[in-house]
Image (cartoon, rainbow, N blue to C red; front, side):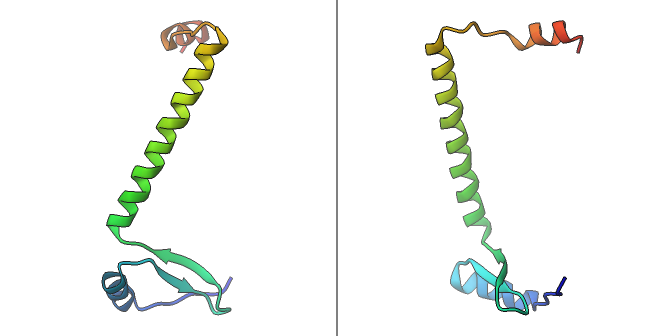
Length: 82
């Protein structure tokens, strides 16, 4: 595996100047990593959280429409001896 080296101080300065992302390239010129700002990381996390919530709601709606009976977690634990 090829080693990738970078000047972290310079790379972080680029991130601060550009707002990111800053791509890190390997010896073959292909991107191997991307650095993003904390602000952008929070935006991505918030987006993923909203997506997860929407998917969970869709699954609950589908389950409710199916007419299947919901089983409380405590009942599952008791039956499984957890």
